[in-house]
Structure formats: structure tokens, C-alpha cells
Image (cartoon, rainbow, N blue to C red):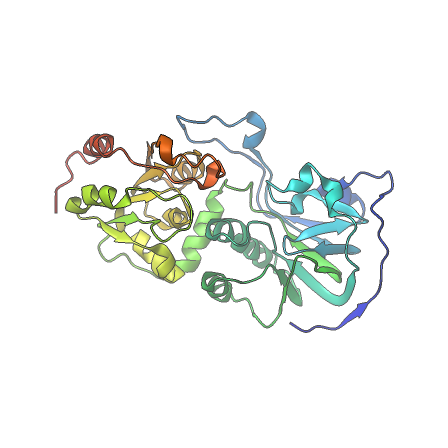
Length: 365
């Protein structure tokens, strides 16, 4: 996207003055920033999860808001906001390495001054379907809620069809965007910052309702009795090594194997809406359970790194959740690979027993 800028060289040294490296919303408001609160603060109550317990601090969630400020810049495809050379803490992703090593951001590239009002939705995690759907798209909704007026939208690279498709569904003009690169650093005339929707991997109800209203608008359920198994066969990480055996157990009950990444986003949403049973391996494809009807039964095949986000999503969306732990195989444990990416294995005998308990009364098809 071409836009009119005046390029000035700004010398930034790696030695920053003694002022704190982070700033927060309260301090920004004191400096004249204008904030519109959209949702209230809330105390998030995690669903009972047998494998992990969240600390108290994790459950305190700030409400969403939209902030307007001047004399601020946006840096990189991660959308880091800086005010007087201080990092605006709310612009960082939950797992940003800058929390531990904030000096790593310096020295900053030269600033490109832009005589436009720019809104930003760039955020680390942008390249993942789950984070795109639940953390980035809802920030556009916040802009719409405040009827924010901006000339350009600052956004991370659009590498996948679902990114462009969902932006267009939300009415975003793709000719009026700034595609941010790792070294992009601009200072607009005015910056509009919609906050993060909650905490990464914690999805409030309003996000679920917003996505359902957007992607399932006017959609009427035809049958609602589908039974689907969401495959990770085509994924490069976290395979169920014996996925074919797993599906062989499910198939007699009328399950069909689906590959979410092969479907347009709207078709993914509709397929989930039509399903009464959903079985899937922990991964981005399971994001779509947020489109399910209340009461839908969700069975997650958990990986070695147990992540509670889909369990919690089910509780918020009023779905019935069940988690089945996978097993490690000593000679295939992949110790050299990060635990988040390792392949795992399903003990078929245990799997059958678990399913017989869950499928009590379910008729073979």
C-alpha cells in the first residue's frame, strides 16, 4: 500500500534514559490519551481441568477498550506500540519475549512519519488460525463498536486465504491497509489502538458471539446431526501417529474425517454448526468449535503438552467437553523437539473403553 510519508532519520541509542521501559493505560491517559471502554473487567473462572490449575493472577481479565493517542509509533509485524520510547505493555502478546528482555527492541529502525490516522490490529500470533480468529479479528469489532474513524489499518502480513477472506467479511478495504514487516516503524498523525480482547487463549463470550454472528449470519441448521473427526494428518507437527487406527474406531459410529484447512472459513463454521459430535486432536482446526451449537459433545485428543484453552472455550460456549490423554512412545518421544510440537500416540484399547463410556446409547451407523 502506497501512502504519503515524510521520512526522517531518528537516532536511537541502545542506552535508554532511566525512565521505565514499559508504560500502561493509566499513564497514557494521564498524558492525554483518549480511551473508550467497551467491556467490563471480569474474573475468568477456568473450567475444571484434571491436568492443570491456573494461578489466581491469570484469572483477572481486563475489559476491552479502544485508545486514541498522538505522538506514538507502531513497530514491526507484531504491532508493538511505543510512546516516548516506552513500550506500551498492552500491545504485547502474552508470550512476548520482550517481557523478559525489553532492551532487545533497541535500537529501533528510523521512523517513517505518516500524516494519516492509523488503526492497528497487528499482534504476535497473527500467523496461526486460532490466534487470528480469536485475538486479531475481534479487534476490528472493537473499532466498529466505537465507530472509529481511521484512514489506514496496520496489519501483519496476510499469508493465508482465511485472513483476507475474514477481513473482507468484516468490511475491511484491503486497498487501505499497511502490511507491516519486521522492521516497519511508523508514527501516524493519530494512532487508534483497539486492545487485545482478553488474555491469549482465554476467549470471552462476546468474541464467540461476534464470530458466530459474522460467519453464520442468517445460517439455518439443516440437520445438526453430523459426527466429525478433525484430522491433523496434513499438519507438519503434533501428529497422532496411529490416526488411521483412531478413525477406524470412530467410523462405524458414523464419523467422517474432515480436513479443516481445505475448506473456506464459512464452510468450516457451517460444518461445525451441523455437528453433534466433534472429535479432534489439539490444534488450530479445533478453533472452529466456537461455532458449535450449545450442548454439542467435543472430545479432544490431548497432546503431550496439555493446553486447557479448548476445555475453557467449551465451558464458555456451553459445550460438553471430554479430554482423552494421548501416550508417549519411548523410541518415538522426540526429546530433541519442543514439547509443543511432538507427535503422540493413542492407546486403542483405552480409547475404545473411553468412547464406549462417552457413546453410551449412541447407535452404530
